[in-house]
Length: 290
Length: 343
Image 1 (cartoon, rainbow over the protein chains, first blue to last red):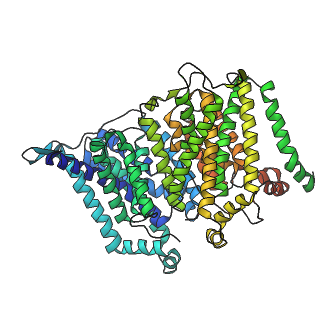
Image 2: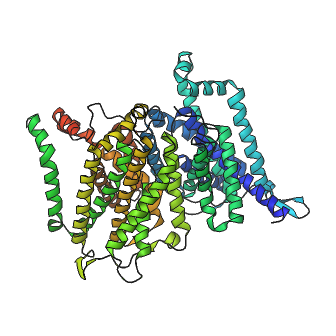
Image 3: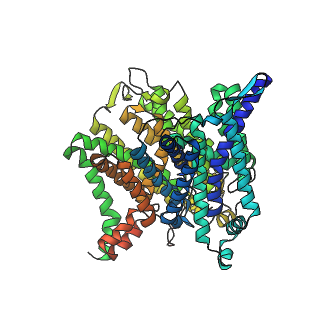
């Protein structure tokens, strides 16, 4: 493999990893702070892609699809939290697994009622189409580069909000000791709702930015859900930094696995997971559970 | 009916009555329902197998469909193209394959706790799904056909004609009864008590010197083997294996059966399988988007009946029904059934 091909694959790996990071960070945020394991996370990824397709079709504008899709997902997250999810705080994992499985069935059928079963595609915006000439003989799709830049921006934003703002402080305090924050007079119901809706919005955002480079199809959430779980297991539950490391590792393993070991590439990420678990059962940045 | 009488009927009469009804079934209902009953019993065995780790062990596994499907695929791959495979050869190999997969996945997954365990079992289960989904040798996403049902031949005599629905049904019924008896024995044995002790208070069980990892791994492998047994029977019945049968949606559906039937009993998941499959059958007949309704029902059960449909009995039959329902539970202690899964 020459240096050029290597560079292209590296960019592919980073781009893939960044989308994985978006989705997995939503999953790990909801679990780390609310203690809720949400199997329906992949369904919201799929829903995001369908919303992007639908809004882009209506408006002809990808930016509108991006903003509109995220907004709808966020509002949906707020509504779902107040109707269903808040009953799951403190319940056992089995209840959480099954309720979110019920949600998947509902979301999938509603999606089919609204958008049908067809496979769709979404065009990237004009100003991001085409390829960029990086060196003499290395060109790379602009849209994929834009995904990298955009996702790094979102990741930086998440880190800043969690580590530098008052909201982030409250969220961290609540994850640490919920009773104490309640005693201190913080309306934790509102914080919960915001955290869940943010997690859902991140899943949908992943689906939206992926829509132009992939196809939009009914089962797309499933693969993403499993991969996000692997990312979270690798990085450590609740750790956004861990999710970033895990996502990049998966991106690299999957992309280069397909180049070097095409016959077993499907197994490689699980092999990676098995090795990490043997080394650290709670993930790379995971804390020891009591 | 007095409380004692009710207890007695529940303790001995009801299971015997159910068994009698089950034996009489092929003689009174059309063939379609015999096939439906076979399918429900097979998935009931899978649900009971899963319940050993979920209900008794407190370990929420999301990969049991993989053991189920793996065993089915073993039969599909071992069957000659136009000839019948030997039941005596393929069944043990299929169950052993499922047990081995459970041993490897269990040994890795049981290093983790709580929610990690759920995620890891989910991921390894999907690994097996993709193995059969992408692999050419097993027909890829098209699946694999079993053209002739396996036959049981001893000394040149063909003992079972599995093409006949009622014969197959009685085989499945026999297996179901055997699995119930086995699980009852396991749950009541010192091993079963140790497994439950590890679920209820891991630290205390460890302090008492129980080898928790080994106990859980044995339970996981036994559960995987029984799931494989169910998968083998399912492959015989359908004559077809598709990768979807290994997928995590299937695992989650079986988990719903376990929850509907109640975690605390051996036979509860069997009832859960009957209830869920019966419900699907009715919904499919009336609604195009039946999964929407099924999803709503699943959510409602989780929110309103966290201990399964058994909770409905006291509401329907009054307070008198409450006590027997609890007597029926196999839990050795008198403490209220603790929920599974401790983070």
